Image (cartoon, rainbow, N blue to C red; front, side):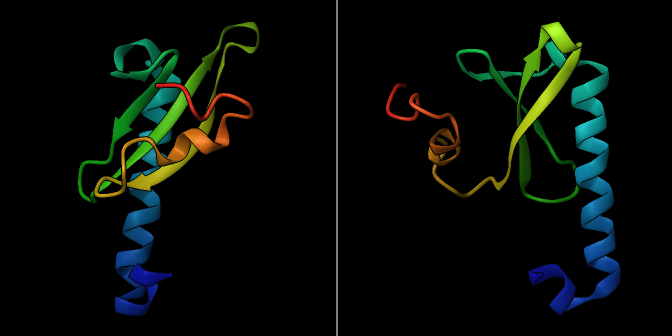
Amino acid sequence: EWYREIDPELAESFLEEVYRSIELARATPEHHSRIHREYRRVLCERFPFKVVFEIVEAAQAVHILAVTHTSRHPDWWKRRIQGDFRHS
């Protein structure tokens, strides 16, 4: 919404960058940095955001947990891990 209020084309570019980052996670999941246990992240190139994900071996897929601004506390997304958010 914030990017859309500034410029609809900027919002479209943001979405394209997020989708590109998700595709990178899907194509080369083990290539990306671990940030907590089995969780990894892909940094968006043109926007200050990251995609947090985990590899789901059984499904040969990735599970996206969050798309978050890089200035947020690095652990805020852990609340999405049911029963595991207090561990570091």
